[in-house]
Image (tube, rainbow, N blue to C red):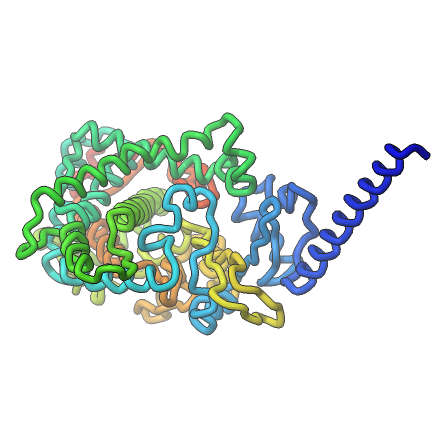
Length: 502
């Protein structure tokens, strides 16, 4: 054997040994984690996830491996948690151990671990405490904000009346109305429904969400590094959001130029005032920076706007699909509110049917089937499995909203899920549309009252119909991934009292 051949044999043996030891290390680590389908090199469990859409595929795997299992997105291991009981343990019983934000490639690139939802540790604690108190000071949960939501609902009424019974696809108008609630709180402004520039910004943001939820967006989540170099619609996810980011930065600069510390107008002002106060603490690390401000308002604006608008949109389709629901809602509105006075937040407790309907719309439409990833903040033993600090955990919110042990007919729209035998509203602990625990949706109370007032005001004035027979109307999501995206459907808004003439 020549010297060259000897060297090559040693090298091959050395590389083989490294590969073998690496494989043994992988098997040892995997044996400590919850069970799951065996991953392939590089691909991970892509073949088990690529056919039915991510939420459906992850739920299907649960049937074999139970409520807690490990899946590999490429080479990235993730513990998937399903079912109300296991999710309750993650969010509440072991809440502090699962408190960190996990890795979500698309959001890692967008937010760089900055801002309210995507930071961790003391930075997150300070930002969340500040934001909760500031939103309360600005009116969240108070009559002043309720008045603004009602005003926005009446802008919707005026817009729908102007259509004169012509079929209309309302998704853009709904997201504009929803965005105005967040714009009022965060930016101190309101955008007109006819503002073409703003409408284009919102449409691009919505298209970005659609791509994130498509097969292309899911491929990016599986293989972020590889997909960053490949052409395809996923490359547009970030470009489509640039106009909204620029709008947020433009607002921040305007607030910096016009700030009056004695009279804060909105969240940006309050944050800028806190920044000035933090300047006194020289040498101390602070989360109150322009980067964290920009990330926080961008995050809250995206999440708060999208979730409410899409829920209302799905709700309209459900009401059209089941016209008997509208009849009962109209009856309850007429009995409790009438057709003259405005609904108020306190009416919700007097309207169990409407309250139950909105909860069931949220449960059935299942807007965000996969909750934002968590990560273990320390080593933890969970259900007998060792999860080291930094383990990514994926909470499947859809599995709680459709848990058969808590919902009689989880796959169907059934208002009785939230009504007792006496027609009174009943709470269901498995209703985790907002997640739970210390990282629960910060605007939960705002979203709840906004949904109630938006639905009640519109149904106080209109009956909703479509151009097709309700029985043949398909309301299943057109994309299902990060978000369940409702199908586009033209709706006829018929002023009440004129239904028979249409």
